[in-house]
Length: 103
Image (tube, rainbow, N blue to C red; front, side, top):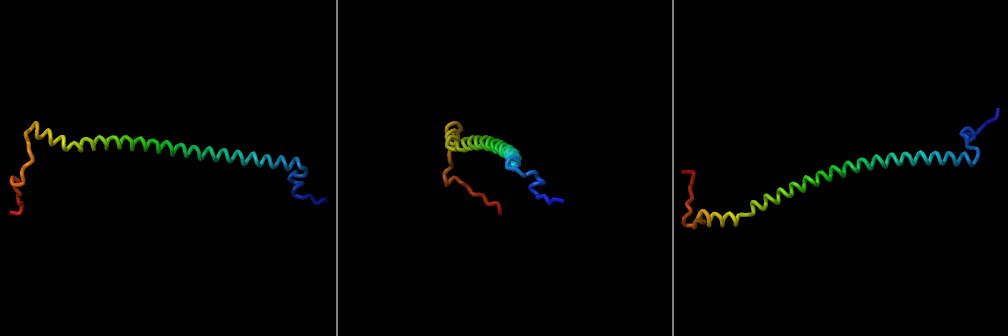
């Protein structure tokens, strides 16, 4: 009975068979890397979509806040309209009466 080595059992006797195995392993590794990269890209794209949606919501909220600020920032205009149209005026300090609720 002749003792045979492991490379003989694997069929790696010639240089061509070694090259074939190296190419097959390289092909398998390349395929797995393509699958991994595609998977990571899908997750990154989904995250990008969520971030874009959040940015759009923040833009809408920013617009609403700017509108609210411009509405509340019209104190001078409100005072002018009250003075002109309603003949209202700011009371003098001597006309202000403080009421005490503890009595």
